[in-house]
Length: 274
Length: 274
Image 1 (cartoon, rainbow over the protein chains, first blue to last red):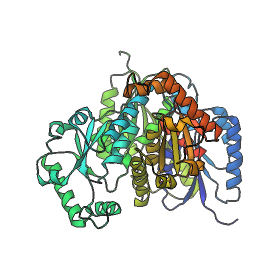
Image 2 (cartoon, rainbow over the protein chains, first blue to last red):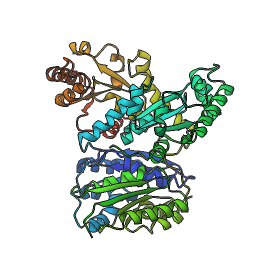
Image 3 (spheres, helix red, strand yellow):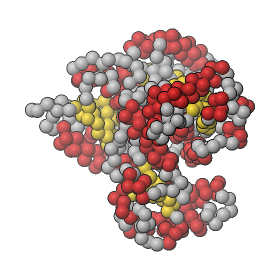
């Protein structure tokens, strides 16, 4: 048999995000091995499960390395069918549901659709409200916006505020306002007048000047705005401001939006609204 | 001991999202039990782990129901400390890492920060580009935007396009354009002229008219725009258009953004760019 890339297969009765999250966390610990990823979401009937089994076995048939199969499937019947996929099965329902039933002294209801579904419209509304909050303020923020915000992300242009605000809204239902530090703001060491009353809600974002230069160059090549000197100066002044006023802050350079958002939740003691 | 609410505790060396995802999927199967949730992210040193143990044991000490503790922790040393929390421990690293090592014939590197971190800036750039794509087009879309899009979400105003576009961008790095069906568009049964050349990339979103009426009323109370008759008519006409042109579509009414995004990835055969 010719050498082949090992498959990592994620099978879920819903979105697949939980199976992928768990699988990625495990597979990332084997950095010398390459995996070919395949996700099968919404596998919630025996018929769909049979089709997945046929497809997975066909795809991996010619390979001398059997696939790793991560499953997040509530129904015992469907998990039973999926076990016919040739491969190493890692199912967290199989691993944990019996322990939980024993501990809680009650049977699991084993109903599909209880994760990442709309449990109630209130939860959904909190998220949508937070997304709208974030979008409405992206171009410029008012005093009322700042008063209504759960947290205010402050940083120079292109330091990563917008995606972080949006992720806070979508994942946690948090209303995050976005305050861009302009060159005018940076001329002073004082906090910008507008955000001063809300100091306790401010979280600072900073970024490596070289990375900022790279990002800004994509948008406005050869501009003063994107020049290495200007990026260095703005970042330096923003960081000085954060330190001087005791504003908690972090660098976005080597962090994903997930990490940034979780770090801000922790630093600002925010409670998820979803 | 007085009766108390059982705690569900999520402890992670990174964001906590994977532990929460797995824990929620399991706990949602016990719908008659209420849990008090607590998340401890970034527990990546023995000192932090000791503090968590002290805090968890203090919080749950007076309770006759021991907590359920979901952990996503790479380091065996830190997991060892966390085991001193009194409670039922469900650790997917403990459950699966040995099986994986055996299957892969190699040792896990057991390094923190390999999940939800920036593995490479290319991946990060794909996401940011997709977020910017989505934001730049939210107010109005050009022919070039539509040509560049991976997928075009089409639906009446407030049917859920914007949050879904943003989630596709943040979670999957997908460039999703947003085409709002205006009353003018809906006067014709033909596809809007602008999107016609890109028919194969269109995915339709629809919504229950009563829910749409509720959402629109929040924005413009007592308007023609928000009236039940108008909502019913717009939704009816949009759905007719989808059916007539064989546009795949789904209702957003009872779905979360995670479900919508995963469903669109599947229906449009999109590959994640992250």
